[in-house]
Length: 191
Image: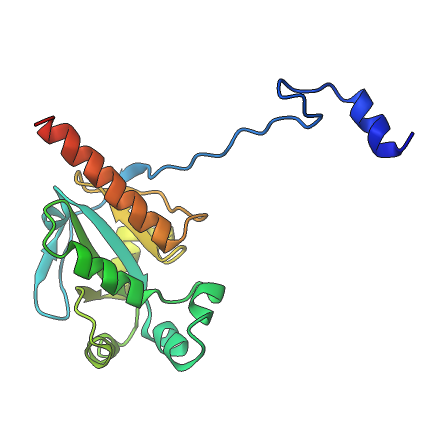
C-alpha cells in the first residue's frame, strides 16, 4: 500500500468523506475602531476639510506619493499591480462614479515633503479628486496605518477602518459600496 493510501486510511474522514480537515474560510470585514482626531486642512484646490466633512459618509482615504505615481507612469502599467504602487487611475474612476453620492466620498493625501509636486502632477494627469498635500497631517491622522496599504476607509461616525492588508483596492471599493448600500436600504426601509 502506498504511503498516501496508508495516511488516508489512518486519517478520520470529515463529514464530507474527505480525509482532509475542514478549514473555515477567513472572513475579513471592514472594522471601524479608532476615532480620527479633529483636523483642519486645505486641499490643493483650496477647499478646507475638517473631520465634520467626513461624517455622514463613507470616505475612501488614499495615501500616495508623486515619486511612486511617476515611476508607474514612466514604466509598464502592469508594475502598478505587481509592486502595489499608485492606483490613482482607479481612484479617479471611483471618484467620478461617486462624485454626487450622498453616502460615499473620496479624499486623497499626498505624502510628498515638497507640497508643490502634488498640484503639478494632478494637473498634468488630469485628475480631479481632492488632494491634501501634508505629510505631517498624514502621520497625525493615520499613524502607522498610513500607507500600508495606501487605502483606508472612514465611516460616517468618523472612525477609521483597520488596514485590510489582504484586500486589493478594488475589493475595498466594492466593500464601501456594499456597506453604503446596506446602510442606505436599512435607513430608508422598504417602499
